[in-house]
Amino acid sequence: MKLLLPLFHTKGIVMLLIDCPYCQEKRPEVEFQYAGEAHVLRPDGSSPVTDERWAEYLYIRSNIRGTHRERWRHTYGCARFFNAVRDTVSDKIIDTYKAGDLPYSPEES
Ligand SMILES: [Zn+2]
Image 1 (cartoon, rainbow, N blue to C red):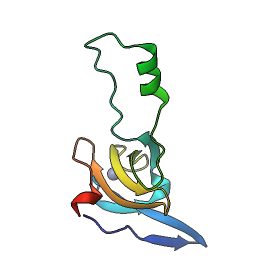
Image 2 (spheres, rainbow, N blue to C red):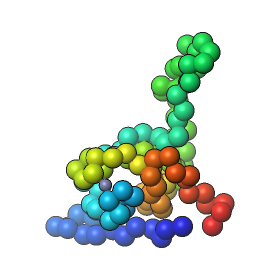
Image 3 (cartoon, rainbow, N blue to C red):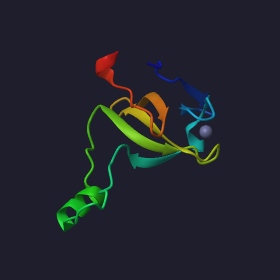
């Protein structure tokens, strides 16, 4: 498990540093773009999808309070998508990992 990533101050603004798992360096949050909840599975198309199931896929998100898994894009860096585990209460990013890798699980630490 990675430790919480530090904040840094620039011109009186507190900015979060995000560790891009591809670039393998901590960069200012302004280089990144939030891309929604992670691990939302698209219906595979092997069987007909109801309107309810399709609407759930498009619009229903967990919106939890606490540890949340999210997709981010390093827009002004490598431009790749990755996942992050963020505490929505403290706004701290706990971990980042490449798309396709297993997510951090607080139960395992
Ligand atoms: Zn990157």
